[in-house]
Every structure is written in structure tokens, then in C-alpha cells.
Image 1 (cartoon, rainbow, N blue to C red):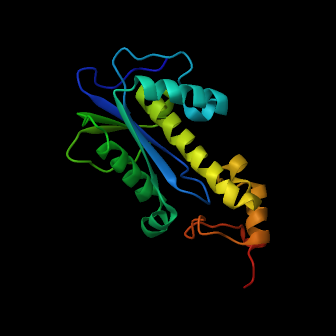
Image 2: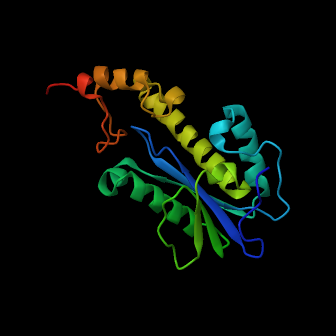
Image 3: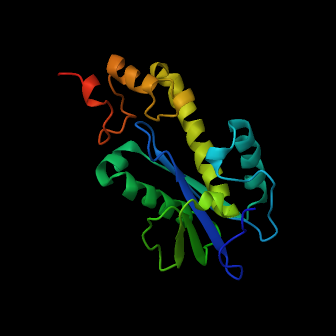
Length: 199
């Protein structure tokens, strides 16, 4: 059973990101504040749920949240500041865009930087422990998946609709055959050494 939040007497947001390990596309961050009476039997870490369940939960979360915000940090910024900093920047932007400023921030993972002097706590595997972090993980994942499905229409060779930009064998073979796109992260190792092109 997931807990509601860390501090029951504060207005607390949960935040998480999706797409950190991808070769292509943005890293997407979400922040959310849920009402104190929120509960749902299926709400869990987005990685544990089917796409159908995530989309069902997305609609419920958006309808019942006090406020939420989702942002994409694009490839050029990821390449400039590295993926860890881009993930934290995305979470900062998501929190900054909340219509109700939080009094406390619950962060999925073990790395974060202070944001506007608001106290925070990092929770390893927090999306499997707290409802608001799980809700943020679902929003980040579903918004990013939707973005990659749109990109798939422009670049069908890479099958981003299916692999979402993650380094699958199929995705790497497509990079080998067709080269990279403007949506690939240039700072990432797109191909294993044995597949690199001698240009």
C-alpha cells in the first residue's frame, strides 16, 4: 500500500521523470500535488503498469489533482548539461509551473538540487512508495510516450512508437542503417563499438 506523502501537515508535491536512459527524445518531468483523501487501488510505479492502465490513471490523476505540471527538456539541453542535470532541471521547471507552490518536495531517486529554498527529500524507488511520486511517474511516462508517438510519424524507421527511444537492439540497428536524427542525443553512445560507422 502506497503512502500518501511524507509530511501530512504540509502542502507536498511529488516529482519524477521519464526517459533518462533513452537515446532519442526529451527527458520528461512531472510534479503533482494530490488531495489528502486521494486513493486508487492500481496506482503504482508507472513501469509496473500496462500502457492501458497508465492512460486510465492519467485521466483520473489529472481530474483529481490539486495541481500538476509536465515539462520536456529537449535533446540540445541534455547534450549541453548532461542527463542528470537535465532531469533535475526538468523537475525544477515542473515544480515551478505548479499553480499552488508546494511547502515540501518528495523526489523520486537519490539526486536533487535545492529549489527555491523549499525543503525536499529524495526517496529511492519512491514511485513504488508514495502516491504523489507514483502519480508524477505516470504523468511523465504518458506525456513522453505521446511525444515519441508523434515523432514516430516523422521517423518511422526507428519504431519510436514501440521502443520510445530506448536503446533496444532494433533501435540501434536502425541508427546503424539510417544514421541519427536531430532527435537523437549526441552526447549518448548511440551505437556499441562493434556497430560504429567508420566515417
